[in-house]
Image 1 (cartoon, rainbow, N blue to C red):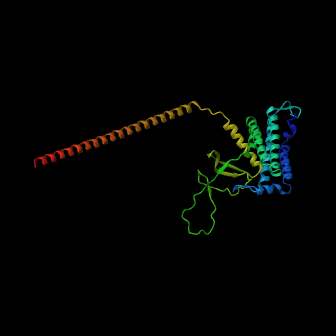
Image 2: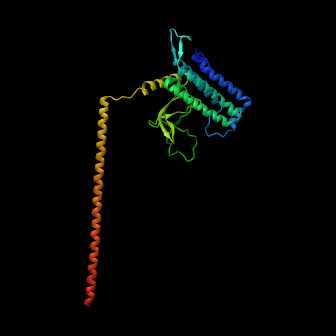
Image 3: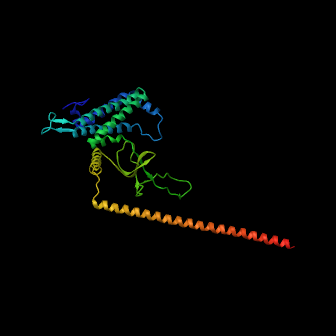
Amino acid sequence: MPWSAALPQAMFAHPLVSVVTPIATGSLVGYHTNRKGRTKQVYHSLKKPPLYPPTWAFPVVWTVLYGMMGFAIHHATVSGTIATAYPPSSSSSIVQDWAVKSQTLYISQLALNHLWMPLFFMFRKPAWALADLLLLSGNVATLMHIWWKHDRVAFWLMTPGVTLDVVVQKATPNSTPSSTLPTSFTPTQHISPTTSLPLDISPYAPGTFAHLKGTISTFRGVNQLQLERVFPVRDTNAEMRFLDQRSRFLVEVLDVPWRLGREEVERLRRELDMDEEEEERVRRKRRRREERDRRRMGKMREREERGRVRRIIEGKRVEGVGSGGAGGI
């Protein structure tokens, strides 16, 4: 088979080799960087936020992420391979151009990924590590763009590295405690925002895989998931079933062009006309009410003006009577 810019095609065509290669290379880099405990020393010396994952979660999470990366490039290679004879073999198949490009980008992003750890923890060069992250982000963005157009399964296998805030609603605490001094600690109860059913999130520690369902919202420009239901993903088979289910939904539902039938269009037009008539009726009612208010205010001002004129006339009349009486005396 032809070569990409870095490795032979046969390597990417084998699922086990594709999965094991990034895990093995990442483990070697981590072992070499963490000699004499340098990684832990630097990590514990950093100023961290109140909630941060424990050290044991990093090897677990990165092992899974590297494995998913490897399976993604394997899936992209298989999807981009066209058999020119039957049965297909290494000499009777052609790898499409987009698959070759994705292999090159995959190898370069893997190298940049492995390079960050020694730059930050071994050489203590945070500026270089930041530059490495910027290059890595551009590399991965290009790779994801190619996979989004040609292989959605590979695309979604690379997405676990993206962070999404998950918001879990708390149940309203009891406002009438049984005593002034609590005798025991009451754990926080989480509920679904729509059904108010209890949600148990205690088993989901950092590094745990879970199937989440909820509604997407935005807070200060950050996408969030308002959690409705959560299910544990206990093994790799369950995870792959979930990925297959999500990929099918994206392809069979979201990617299908949305077309309305004639009856649906007519119904929507009638609803639009009814909405416009209702808005016009509300506007006419508002104008009539404002006109009545203006007439009422005008009449009140007229009455006040007539009363003021009458009081002035009566006052002058009283003054005239008083001055006439004084002249007679």
